[in-house]
Length: 80
Image 1 (tube, rainbow, N blue to C red):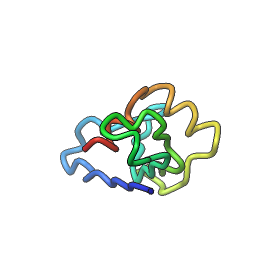
Image 2: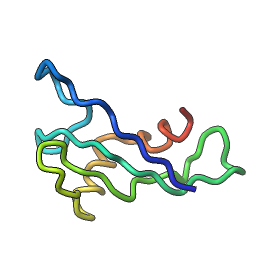
Image 3: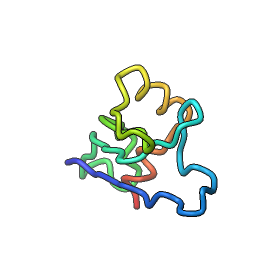
Image 4: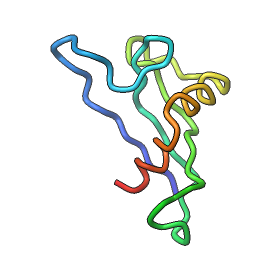
């Protein structure tokens, strides 16, 4: 099972939604969702994301760093 969430970009130039190295990250895709893990989804993880300013995909190292900076976010999204 895969889950994708694309947040609205702030029109006011306000603070970014989620960031990595000061750049907004969006279009996050989460995998590792298993019905038997409901409702916590502890095995959920990010498989892709993009920088909002350029649309450039995060590489493997950047995805890992993003997950470290936002622990539990993949599981949180899976629960919503």
